[in-house]
Length: 60
Picture 1 (cartoon, helix red, strand yellow):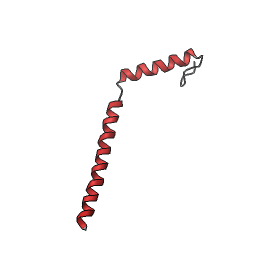
Picture 2 (spheres, rainbow, N blue to C red):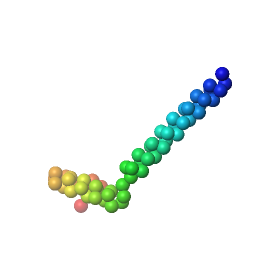
Picture 3 (cartoon, one colour):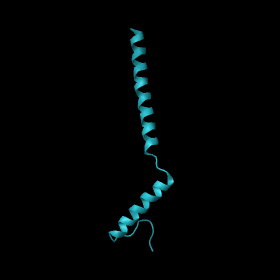
Picture 4 (spheres, helix red, strand yellow):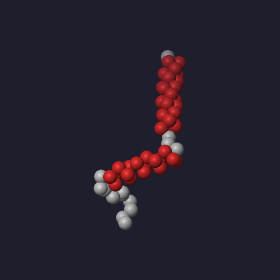
């Protein structure tokens, strides 16, 4: 009966390791380059300015 417990724990560890590997791959895939971040931020600021709102963080 003891080997069933060991087999079960190995299965749980395998599932957890697979989840970690998937999460890391997803994080890498969603990582943006610095230039992509700049472009996205500029688009957001332009969108707010076209709505007539001031960008947050700076008061002229």
